[in-house]
Amino acid sequence: MTVHALEAARRLAPRLAARAAEYDREGAFPVEDFEDLREAGLFGLMVPRELGGFGATFAEYAAVATELAKGNGATALVFNMHASVTGALGAVTEELAEALGVPDEALAARDRLLRAAAEGSWYGVAMSERGAGARLSQLSTVYEPVEGGWHLKGSKTFCSGAGHADGYLVAARSAADPSMVSQFLVPAGAGLTVEPTWDSLGMRATASHDLHLEVTVPADRLLGGVEGLALVVAQLMPHWLVASYAAVYVGVARAAIEAAAEHLNARNLAELPAVRARLGRADAAVAAAELVVGEAARRVDEAAGDAETNRWVWRAKLLAGTTAADVAASMLEAAGTSATRRGHPLERLYRDARCGSLHPATSDVCADWLGIAALGGDPDRDGSAPRW
Image (cartoon, rainbow, N blue to C red; front, side, top):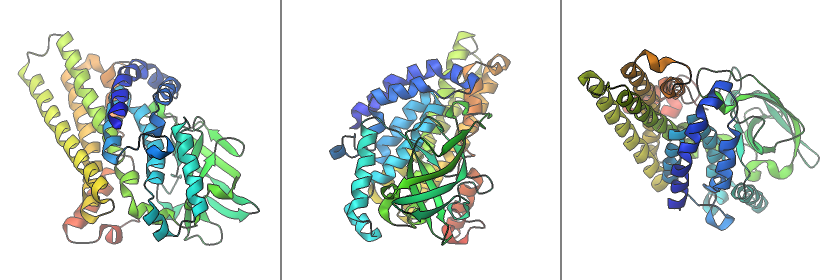
């Protein structure tokens, strides 16, 4: 592959970094970044080779995401959403499809969506809702069958890339049976309204606005062709829902160290032992987080959904989020007050890094999950709140 994809990400990172400050300041979607990603063919990163993509593994995705995040964490974060959609779709093997009862026509529809991604389309994720977060079982968006397709109605929040994506993965509950949660790939266009609500502390360029839906989609836009698969897929592929963010925040943390080093060298502060010690600890912490993220990704590729794999998945999310926040804060302290000015790379990276622990699953939820597992319990059953 993916050597070419990784090389493309490394080549693009400086260009993303050069534009990051302006996009952050304006809170504007990084349109030029996504033009670069399209031109590099990276929307096909997780698309199987036979459908025109790179056919990347989860570990290869993680490496690409880390490189992109060194340039602009917000761009990498939105790209993560697209990779999550295409990665989950591409991971449905014939054996898994048969086990889930996925009909042939649904597989053909899946292939059309993946082929479109390889050709330059990209997809956002419309899952979270106000008051429910990302808990699938608590959603208020509903769907019902109509002639020739499905009618969806509801509102989503934190929809990264809202108004810019070519389609959105929408999770909704059946109006007839609220226990049944399904996912649809809803094309951009009529029936979707973006409400500009995103004015955040960090990751300001993700355009994670609210998305209101009242739309009818063709029958083949029900992913899997079978109602009720969303919760099943969440259990089978928790890496896409829990830890795909992890690689992004490793990249953000590494960028913070590099920005701090440049700042300190330019101001002749690198001779201070306390400053050097901060960089040394930060370097070790990021390297440790990167190893855990890499181990989790390796295990996903070897045994996705395995109990021990899942423990590494949750460890990766927890460590990446907390490490990024701690490292960025330390680097800002090492650099001093001048680095807190708006427009300084460390000021932006500090704010972006602080968001890592907040994405679902939050650091507290991750730690609780791991604690239950360490005590010999079942984290998905014994937790105080439903994971999905």
